[in-house]
Length: 71
Image (cartoon, rainbow, N blue to C red; front, side, top):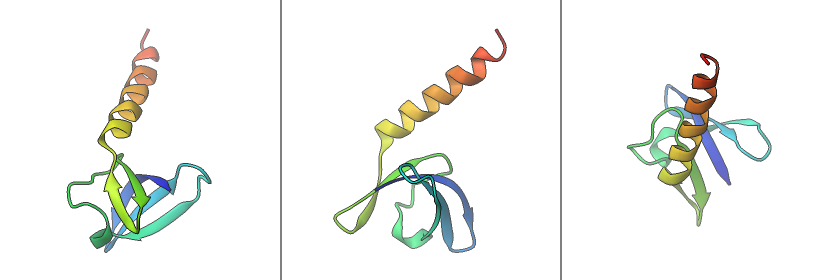
């Protein structure tokens, strides 16, 4: 499963499942400490991992869309 971290609330990371688009609360202590809002995390083998490559791709797409608004 793949998630995008939307925000942090109390002891949870509020994440959007990229397949179902449902919002899920994941305990903050289960995700990598370096994970930030907007990052992509992947759940595999019973653990959450930060996917730096997908995070970069996603941020690039968002930046391109934003920049196209000003052209």
